[in-house]
Image 1 (cartoon, one colour):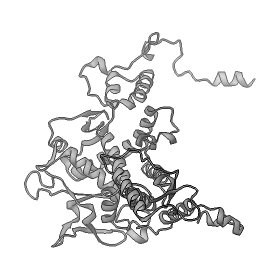
Image 2: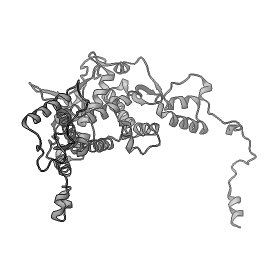
Image 3: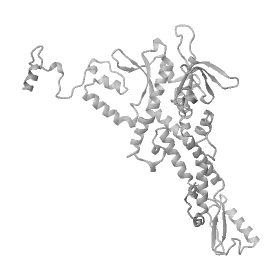
Length: 438
């Protein structure tokens, strides 16, 4: 524990200030597990992580807020392999309200929060049991991930069902629940039934951040570190030269000056004062530095640039726009593409009428992605893609006009069919090879 591990002689012990000792004690508290550790269970990830830590809450909400700049849409692939956006289909209704009490926007947020916090997210999907629409789902419901438990099966078929640990316990059939999760390689612990929480991977960091907040809060509650005000050069005793009445009068005056209406007013003394501080401020303890380092670690866990969380000192990007592009490509797009794929499987799997339809995450209107989109369009144009192919590849709808399906040729280029060659039928190049080998 620093600074004691640097001591070489007895003299070094006397060279260490009280501030050094308190800083070392604080660093030991937040790194050696003396502070309250984060419990390895979903309730703790929610209560002490997302709901109990400002940095975790801010980061996850930032990811969710940026995700809403793109949009989930329903598309259909036609016989030519081209996809077009679909409107007016029953599956489109889910993009407005997933059930009468929850909008799709809130459903998407809840899914992101649970998965990014707990590592698991559960959707309850009641299905129709009879009629022409048998097997179809008309509503989706978010299940509280911190109270949902997987009923274990065999290692080849690990999930028998699900249950909500309420009072009383609610059991659910396996095919009525869709389980979103991150991969967890700890087979001996989870048997692949549960996902690995990002907060589990950052448990020590979150614990240190929580401890830092408590330390900083205590410093504010105390107003300032405690101190002794005394007459400078007064000898060995800090009280020398003060009578009991003078000490009480000085303490009373100091108390009066720290009140809100008097704060900042100067204290006029009849002697040259000195001060002896008995505590160390959060800055001196390294609380602020520890908090910044913790936020950077969290951002690394979530693959999100810390510069977008006001960490400008750690920026390795040329500008904020570059950082936002990195956030999209490394974090936001992968999360939401997975969300769209899971939504497709949840609502269409096993339903023959729905097989041609699927959900995609469209970022064509996201400002930070426009430069990449422009390069993509230029490349497709040079490659001879038709206007409709380019429109569909960039998230736009087709224009039903034959001209829009013709390949694009740059000025000066002509289609191969318009080119004429004087080539004999069935002519090969054997004579060319023979001449070359001569």
